[in-house]
Amino acid sequence: MESFLKPDLTGRRVLLAVSGGVAAYKAAELCRLLVRCGGAVQVMMTDAARAFVGEATFAALSGRQVATGLFDPQQESQIGHIRLADEAELLVCAPTTADLLARLAHGLAGDLVGTVYLAYAGPVLLAPAMNVRMWEHPATQANVETLVRRGHRFVGPSRGEMACGHTGPGRMAEPEEILQAVGACLAGDDLRGRRILVSAGGTREPLDPVRYLGNRSSGRMGFALAAEASARGAEVVLVAGPSSLPTPYGVQRVEVESAAEMARAVFHHAAGADAVIMAAAVADFRPVERAERKVKKKDVGSSWTLSLEPTTDILGELGAREGRRPLLVGFAAETGPELEAYASAKLAAKGCDLLVANDVLQPGSGFESETNQAVILGREGLREVMALLEKRQLAARILDRVVRGLAR
Ligand code: CTP
Image (cartoon, rainbow, N blue to C red):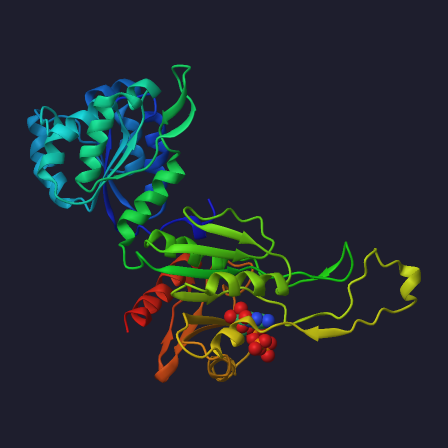
């Protein structure tokens, strides 16, 4: 999985309840993903779950003893059910069978999972998995309604062919999707109700139908920002230049190619946005002429001289607008020791509220890298030098600043 898509779960305490369904094997993959994202995962299993997957699998993946029995005195003294409930920051039930769903809805405490659930007061995420008719049964739907009213979140079920041969809603969501939902549950909601526009990637300025002028932007920084903002509850539009990166969970992606297309899309979606984050590497110049047909070598002779004209400065135009406007975040890819001087001049010139500057020649920073080392500058002298961070982590720090800016 692309690292910008991975939520940062470092040290987050996730209690994963596995109940007995065929999808239990997918819970093993979920457990692996949670651990890979830094989560401290404690697994508990129902008896039925153990008929599908052995507890040794989960013990190996989580690095902890799996909690199974309510009535096992040795386990109870080591990982008592109240301790499980007290220590968890998030309870994830994956898969949630029809039976578990019913027991949770009615508060039945006849086994470990039911008991821990009643002793637990934090957020709950449920990933149902069952036969389509069982899912659609009024009894199940009534239980779902009860649990939604109780404030629990659901991920899935998705539609598709199930192990029983039926097709329809009932399949457990894929582990990656549940992972994103876990990230969203733990990220908090500090951007809920906010609309955020992020631009990402490089633009392509056509010379003819086959050639273009482009740049080395990978789009990862902008995609990481969109993923993180969405996880924190924002409604996110991602205006992206050509990129093969997958669209982050919950994000509306608008694909553009040239700087002019990006300008149109950004201006359109900026109306009504609370913040605009321009992480895209927009071409500053484009060819004055675009040939309708491929330019042949014989047409240009021994050298080809291009005439370039400036593109619209999208950020600069937004920054120059009078009246109420979104919070503006710019990026500056610089090289060399004058980085901060250039960056603060850019902050003022483009009229933005925050500017994230990085030296693209530093190791671990820049276009194709998974990490970035940046300094965040703001109006009124804000200057925050960041450590070398994964792009997703840097995105989180930038959004912390956006949250503060929006609160003013
Ligand atoms: N930007 C933009 N529209 C453009 C060019 C850039 O909105 N036509 C935005 C970028 O998305 C970025 C910021 O402006 O957030 C800085 O881009 P940069 O190209 O470094 O700025 P310039 O003012 O062109 O400065 P330089 O002289 O360094 O090229």
